[in-house]
Every structure is written in structure tokens, then in C-alpha cells.
Image (cartoon, rainbow, N blue to C red):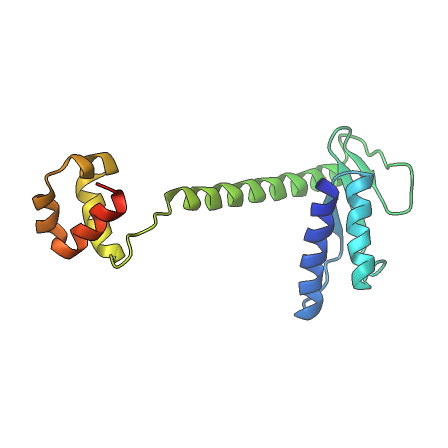
Length: 162
């Protein structure tokens, strides 16, 4: 739910700002229209800082600027330097978020559960030499035993169910 996500993100961020006594921003820019802005305002109200920090929302479709408690959006000229700055800030936030998500997903994809009792160094020795699980399964067991020892190779083959 986009609105709940916005509410939670704003709440967590500014709760932390308050708890750590960090400086408050001069302006909060929310990516979204009336709904997202309203959710962000709800969080600021819950934290008791609504009205202390100016907040706006930018809706993607027509690049409308929304301000709290105003039904009608502000329409800035597409050539307006102010609108271009707000768009660049939004686009940079998107780029940052997408890059972070990709990096987290990439790390998760490469995470390997090591066999119990086997250290990372031993596992990496085997992976560096054989590159893939298929190669390990096809390899003569004695070659792997020479590389990491009998006990660790038993753990590895038990883990791989070979």
C-alpha cells in the first residue's frame, strides 16, 4: 500500500531526526500527489512536528505541486527553474532508491548457506577452483578431499546431498 509505506517511511525518518536531535530540513518533498502528501502529513502530526517543516508533494503525471490543506495543485511552467530543481531532487531520490534495492537484491542472490562446521575460506577454495555446484558434483571426491580435507569434504557433500 503506497500510502501506508509513505506514512511509515516519513514516521521512521523524522522520529529518528527527533530522537537523535538532528537538524530538521528546510523543506520535505514527497514523491506523489494528494494521497501520499496526506499520509506524510499524518506522520508529522503524530510526531508533533506538523507545521514546523514545510512539506510539498510532486505528482508525476502532470508535475503538479501539492501543498497541505489546499485542494488545488500548483502548476508551475515546465520551464520553471523551481520545477526543474524539484524534478531533479525527485529523480535523484528514485535513482538512489532503485540502486540501493538492486544492491540489496544482488547481495541476497549471492548469499550462500555454508555447510555447518565448514568455514568460508574452505568453501571459497572449492568454489574458486570448480566455479559451480555442478562441477563440484561431477568432480572426483578425492580431489576435493586433497583441497580441503576429509572432514570438510564430507560436510560439503552432505550439504550438497551427493
